Length: 250
Image (cartoon, rainbow, N blue to C red; front, side, top):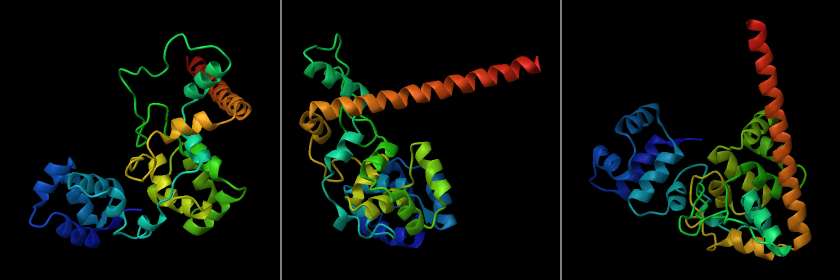
């Protein structure tokens, strides 16, 4: 949920006193037209707050904590569980680790050390931001229902966001709160803030992979491959259905 423009204006005066809107936009990379439109509407997006906080040297988590509904963010910073960390590990990395433990070695490195790749806010070559897997990892059975009730959102709307592998920042924080995990963790998996900004230990995802027993690693890799197969199957069915439509249309 976008934050109040009035509160944003007060926060900005404290963060960058004497700076004009043009200066702030130039420093943060936010378009002047975008900021102007948000101020006129009375609602400023979380991405704007994060960009400006970073530009002026403030941790975005502390910046967001000035606004409702994020006022408890700073107090809700907690290290992610292994389940949360593993939910963000890319499937190829799981398969690579399984191959190595089985006595083999990958023909080619899955992530070249000379050109590390980062994903969203995870700052890790083995990670891949994944909201749906994160929710699955922290779900105790009725988490989705509790989040729907707490956030006042229809369950089907929440499910639609998860199917699209996304959550709004407010829903991500609400989900973390209902699950009893670090509130900032939801913002990391959505890509709004980085793992470092949320206080995650360095290389935490990779260390979680190393700690995972081989049997659990094999089961997780199998589940991921099953999901991939089902997704490809649905894609193939949709493509065939679309092709038949075009054939009927001539």
